[in-house]
Length: 141
Image (cartoon, rainbow, N blue to C red):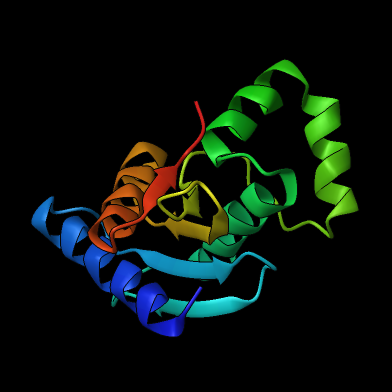
């Protein structure tokens, strides 16, 4: 994922959050290998929101699933998610707000992680940012 695309996702996600009057967000974009491409923490975010956002995005990349799917797996298979979280060094937050980024052919480009509001709103902001960049959002089902 190119830096310009990651920056566009961040700006659009924050714009969506402000339009919807969400709580202050931390937004991160990771490329397909998990490297940080862009990040922002709005004024007023609580401590460690960026790390939570990274955990949502990283967990999605690690499992190849949007974090909404990981949330459902955590409910159904808590021991499995706990084991995977340990296996990936603790960087897996299995709640909505981690969204895979795909190009128009479906190829994986990276993931967006957002934390700060309720998880459904975090996910909605991520989807809005990804779509604004002309890409496909894959939040899981």
